[in-house]
Length: 362
Image (cartoon, rainbow, N blue to C red; front, top):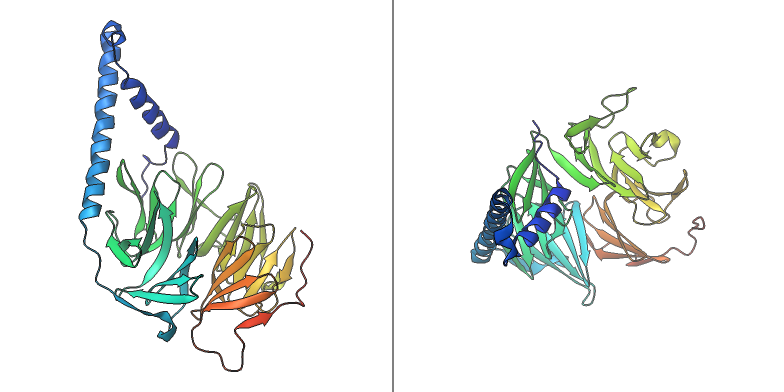
């Protein structure tokens, strides 16, 4: 099911160093022992082969033709739920079943890139934006270029550790890097990926929660309930704590103990779809509204306390939420603004006052 030849970051770094050293020749080269020269020549040859492969991949990518798509004003489209959000400079990208929507903060305008396919995941890798769903594309302005990547199944998660792009699908976990492409896990439907200090967590749809421990992937569960992590939707990690959004509740893991929250403990609903731990106040999105987690307690997020959040992102001090109803909302200070609306709400202003919101001091 699983492969062992993965995530050797230190080995890759050491290989780079070795290649650089091996490239320095001169008169000293002749005085080295034959065995050492053979090893260095071999390493240099492998390094050159990897570089050649990387250039070949780049050439294939540059030769790829953009996908045929329709470009329309997103304001006139009825969307299903938001699957993922990524913000870069003045642009927000939102992945929908209907296509990829680009929202321009400067122009306050949304544009839909429609290929007739659904999009599920977004990520930056090697300075490029990738969008995945039925296929994987590199986003260039308003063009979608088919990516040079080998994987099986519909793309459901994308994650970059700067060395490689990890591609989670409904059939497994794959990696793409300048040094090759590889299948890392078989026969799992990946929902999300998250690195902690020294390992990788993999959330799946119905097949458990896994962590790469440096040797292999191991399934994690609680002895009192071995199925409690069967379906995990979202993961985040910050300040040595792992946050888990699951069908069975909200979890906080400190490396030794699991803290578990359900609707009996104050969550609006036990089913938790999204979590973002980018700030001291951890934003938690459930099937019946949002709460904030801070210092082992929960606080309602007023005016968003009934929002069904599928995706939560942070932009400076702003909270951006993608909803199950297809909206993208932004909370900035004491206001919530609808950036992308499903339909024009009747009798509801675009900007809501949150002056009465109570939050604990940070």
